[in-house]
Image 1: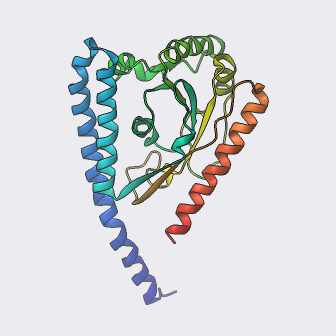
Image 2: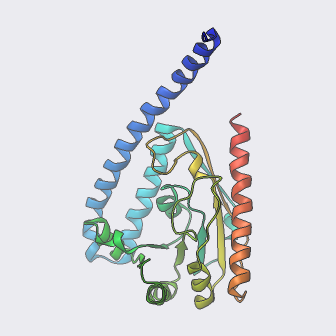
Image 3: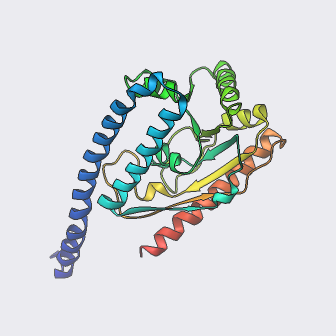
Length: 260
């Protein structure tokens, strides 16, 4: 069967659109990792300085990375529902689709303390700075003890008025993938007695996991109504999953429609 001439035309059109995106993606990735290395080196003196200095470096890193995304890749961000972030300590339960949200929330929150894999704390430079920034490591292989240690560390940080950022699914999941919310978020919510702020986004459309591609568009981030403390754990987990997944699906659909 012979190919129709329009098949080649469409292929050429797709290629002509893809090559600039690939080139910008490669350039961004190079600049992004250079930026990380430079910021970590600049941050080394903060190891012996008060917390506000490492926080300033982290905010600067987040803002510069968002700037690179906008200028190099044409990726913007729209923050929605900022008024839903309470003053002082709270739990932020964030949808996790991409590497993007691991740094971008420093441009949204006053002083976030991320719950992250314990293994990340062993990485030279990064691990030292993460400890200085008082991030909260969790050993995913030891549930009961890990939950207790995570909660103890979180209590220390909320006493300082910080926001505890946790990814309820524990790992990145591509847009459209069936959710898998873990009980750790419900345990933390019950133990800390704080409001939990659900956060939906569609970052995976533009910064896919395990991919070098960065696609132009606007990352939509929506801060949803806080869930007040005192809800029983099962009800809380069902409610959290429901509101985040519904809002995430809406944000994904909104971006997909706008790009048609």
